Length: 410
Image (tube, rainbow, N blue to C red; front, side):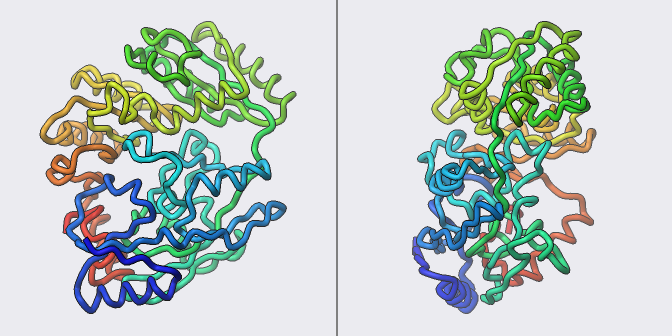
């Protein structure tokens, strides 16, 4: 496979124009850590952005950072952590699920995937923190959208369109994101032994309270949980645990945790953990370590399911029971991760028929290339939405040069 390593945006322009002239689609990569997500692409040319790895602006006092698309996330996180700052959308590290090297995924891949962590219920996703970007369209033309401050957005907010588009609309070369101060303190409340439906009720009660909850997750009973070190402190693997996080100023967190614990006492005994132990638990929830590639469930397909939180508990419980798989819940029951036993279609037909009944959707985040080639990886859209998507794609990339076939079969 030909690899085109670019040095700057001009190189990207030329590469796309050459691809147009040759009618040769391009697969866009940084370090390739997410190549196994999506439909298999029919291309024999890689557009490698890994050399575009500079931080071009960082103003901690203004809470903004501008960086090139190939900047490694590990380096970026280390930089902003040195100023006691973070990305509030808590970006997921997919290397745990996919078995790729840790710490080498890029900021461009993170924004293109749009996969946010547990704090999304409070702070929004990657799309809400992308202030602006520079990119190259499928016409081979450079363009920019947004700016370096929130008020700089005029006209169409293309940043929200590009985030989560998996590189199918443009080649992002540079982007500007908001950063936020890290919380001074955090505590995690834990409830044990709840069934999935009751756990979702407890999480809903916590999220609907006045105590400013920043994350709510439920881990059903699993014989495999004991093999994940971060969860060693959350109780017996044979017993479910419901996790609720509070963050902020130390005195406030202590007071809110006590009050919320009393408010949730009708669901059972509440115990707590804090500091580094709490942070480790939420990192494991964020990266779905229970279903890691090197875990006992590492060979099973993994689905990322988004549904109404009120329906999450019953849906996930029935899915695990009927397939023999395992599930975990995040976003108060609105996000379900499901590891299901191997099947020719990874249970796609049954799963999506049930989801259509409750207004949810599912993405097959981990599966073999054979399975990904046989089923729609991304949830099939309704006819009107699909037609709109085609028009948007044509306005950015009329010849379907960029990541052809990754989201919709070409």
